Length: 503
Ligand code: HEM
Figure 1: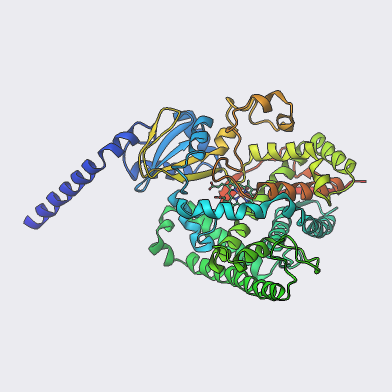
Figure 2 (figure 1 turned 90 degrees about the vertical axis):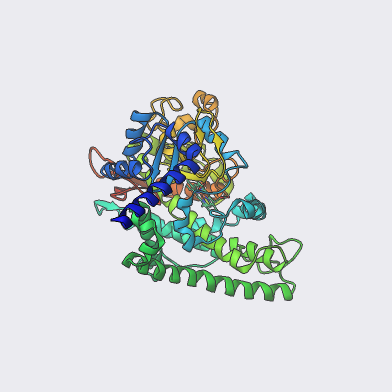
């Protein structure tokens, strides 16, 4: 009895000290509209459980209706501030004080390590400066042949689907995206499109699914609990395969480049070319050249960057191409205009031709507005942070940028649920009057997407090729998308479409 009383007193004391030490934090969190106000852990959890019942991004609109465009939420011991206000987003992404990513990104650390996406502020600035030139237009130009080669394979596979009725095109688009990113990042032909059951394709699928599961089920976020599950076993097994490929490619390319350097074939002063050999230089070659020339970029850094490019550059483009095809299938007049424009530029094999596809670019941008591949992304607030919307974010909170909700707000986009590519044509009144930070599918400011130009080129090449050769039709008279976040935004039912040949 006495022991129980002692434990009780100790517990009350501990809670009191905790509350006193965190008084300011709790006062600030309480000011946010939020589910079940100020019950750390419990408030958010109860609501999260309720909202798991709401499919896709519907929960966003549910909260928006209740709280407006900014709200708070406890998930376990972590306080999240979620905002869909352009001024807030501008303040966050342009602030040197909130460069670090939210703690939730740790779930992908075993896969990506200290690559650019996850790198903390201390190292990020220097690494970003180092990597930016590898996305220079002149370098991307060299990838055009890869886009063409992989596009030809995809075209052949899609041609085989003509006359087959409703087919799910997503696996084809996904393996194509994987082929493109493997070759442009590692210079390796894994031929995922032709070998759909390859160990690598399966490993990427398993690893992505495990990351999704950890996001979806909060108890799996705990490392100790996760490691006890079957999912963890499969996840680490899949990582062994993916990392094994990366390691081998790095070792092979390093040995080739070292030889070329010794033989004087690799020109150290002009490292955009491998002289004499006319070899295409992929991302990995640029990174290894920096390494071999003594820059501060270790083999482990290259390993992490290659894994990061592969991860960031695959599902993001895949899902965006899928949503765009869905929108084109459901808007045949837009699809015909895209086909006409693609035919009028005479091909898709040069970046100059792709540059002329202004309407297609507007279509992709509008598709990324309605269905941003990365609908939410986060930052860690080490210190208190004042938002222009009037709230003060407490130190230690996670800031969630809600690009999806912002892109659907009437305040920024007239008739927001309508698919209107004209919004993004230069000179349109909406384009010129919109708040600069109200459209952020690639994020903005410091940690914006380093691969956005690459992504745009690659998506344009794929879509222009497909739409100029085929006509895509919806699977029913009233096609619907059932959205889900599986690391990236996806449609749960894939991309069921009917394919016809265009004459
Ligand atoms: C439609 C395609 C894509 C979309 C919508 C997209 C979107 C984004 C977004 C929203 C971020 C910021 C994430 C955050 O703050 O946590 C980001 C970062 C990043 N993206 Fe992309 N991305 C795409 C394609 C690519 C491609 C093709 C690559 C590489 C080849 C790539 C590489 C990266 C990297 C390395 C970062 C981290 C940048 C940094 O922190 O400095 N992305 N991307």
